[in-house]
Image (tube, rainbow, N blue to C red; front, side, top):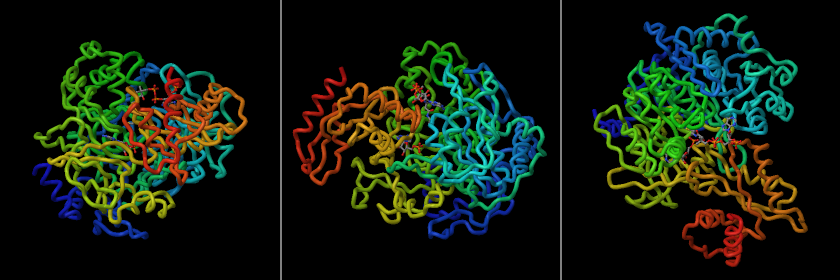
Length: 628
Ligand code: COA
Ligand code: AMP
């Protein structure tokens, strides 16, 4: 069967196709019902199937005789540590931690917030939760306490599992003061806080009362067996930015996700069991969940937990060192990482130092990949670089190329073709499908493939409003796209208030809320402007209240640190320009797209609905002055 035939079958015979794919994982009870509706009338997969994710990722391989295969490699240039864990060792770590969680009274259906850095204990924690049916919510380490508070109050965890610190290049980021602050601010009271002590420095003073030591808990606990959960049991919640300030708790099922990940690993990434797969991401993002933890482990691939950056840890050759040393077969990262390496090592001198003979394919996603970066990659690495598109919401690729089939063809700047199960179309604003080469909205006919979000945690109306109401019968992705005559799709970027900064998904509305909370600010707009390294960066344009005498530079500094304090360093807001007025429509809507296009230095059209055209030249003049 070829890729196109497979796609066709997945659309024409959905249930038959996915029932066959579901046979590739081991169920405790194979589903009799393949596709049905949930209590909200939304499609769900494999409703009466039973399985366990931790079993699939660990025990299954041990039963099959692969207990001594290396499952996880921890490589941390920032601490100089390396450690390998076989599947047998992984089982000990995970089952004892799971036993520890049970001893604290956790049970299936409870939630756990995980705020941890790039260390293997994070992966153990996720798998330990999955083992006993506890729903985890991993929070990215670059987020501030406030982001933790939002998640704690929304998912009401019984336990918060954290570590003493993260390490950003040479900087230690203490987590405990941030956790203490979050717990103080949250309305919901977490029962237990478990802390993994990395022993980087003597930091006893950072501890607060009542914490439980991770290692002591593991050491004193009995290993817990896996429990059988329903296919629709939530494996995890992962909060992501939307068009309002409040992040959305994407709810992932177990059975559909396991089936989709097994499918992706085999057909999209073309991985054979026992090979090494490396996704250079972070546990806090969907890529980290799907392709650092569950995907590779389900497929019996060795996965790498890399604690470092593409550059400066210690140099721009670090990716090639890891690939060479651990015989990485296939790698996944965001284009930003390649751009960062290209900037530091334009002639690829550091690449020549390493034996990359095992390195066969590179996958890129998270943001648009520019052709110049692909050219550099081709010139210096010369293996296929496959762009592909997906979202936290889908949990696995929706556009890409099935590299399992040798005849896959890359088209520059395209994120590929629809992946089986995703009937993707490009619509105009009235819901009519557009012809090739016309830009429109990227939408997907329902039902989505297995593993795509079950909904927004405890908020079906918001799920409906955010994704299902714009085009009835279709899921609206929030992205724009163009299709070509061969069915390749070119993703043109978000059409909402979401921006992608260095592959990190952030909400401009959330930033606007923080900027507007500054006592001197009357109103503001935050837009994503183009950036050579990070793809996009946020830029705030703000109007001060009448009578404010404080200088612009001082206000800018205060706002930058406010955003850092409220959202986190990852927000990367470095520019705040104070203006007299914002361009608006006659009905008072801020013309954000116009501001963005102006700041990008691109040609723009003045909307006929603009209230006062004069504002445009005011802002342009101010920007010329601001830039210098
Ligand atoms: N914990 C604490 N702080 C973090 C953090 C974490 N896990 N991750 C990032 N930050 C901080 C950074 O230290 C930086 O702080 P600073 O403003 O004090 O310097 C800030 O957040 C912005 O981080 P980032 O956008 O990552 O910029 P950077 O300049 O540190 O690094 C790259 C730029 C390109 C090297 C980096 O973004 C990268 O490796 N990107 C790869 C893409 C990726 O991993 N994408 C994930 C989805 S696939
Ligand atoms: P996240 O949910 O963090 O994975 O971010 C998803 C968003 O990232 C998508 O909606 C796109 O805007 C963007 N994105 C992901 N992959 C690509 C890609 N290959 N090309 C263009 N944009 C992408």
